Image 1: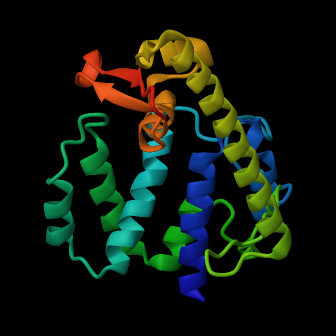
Image 2: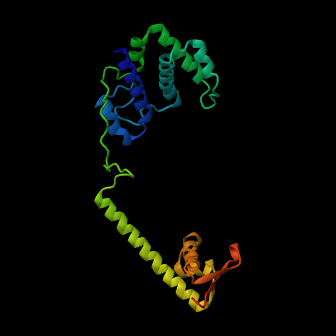
Image 3: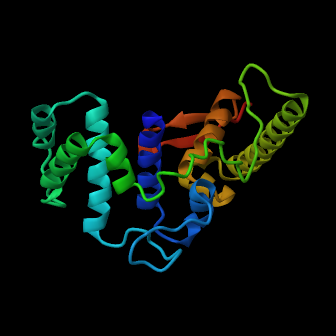
Length: 224
């Protein structure tokens, strides 16, 4: 029973730290329903924990419970805490040790009821329903409709590339020599996109390469 309450404390604490605007209303209601037990705050006003001090109090509670769950004694916990700078909140070390000492002094049950306002509300362990539901795809098992879509996409891609290559070949025949900049301007493509097309001109015997790198030119192969 104590383990479930400790789990509830961690989940509820994380919920209170997370719900910083009204976009989390649904998450809040999934876990604690219409309950609101935040002292000194109007019901359902966000963020749940407004200032850094209140947020660190909740964080120090979580840290103390986790340290205790790992079986650390005070000296071990103190050693771990000193390995962090705590520059963003200098009081963190003291707050964490105080909560750890308090947990040891009053016991789990009293500690949970003191620091988890929603301790008596059972955890909602159901997984949330996704807004969009995509089927799981496996590289070794593709459904027939997906195969059809892949085939169509490949055909469209291949057709577009062949059309661009034909345009580039026409330009090459007209000018006799072209470079990457000519191809980019004609096809309205980037250097990376025209590179495989220029390579195809060479591989298919339409052009020969002259020069290197930025000075590379593609000469029309007259006897092709």
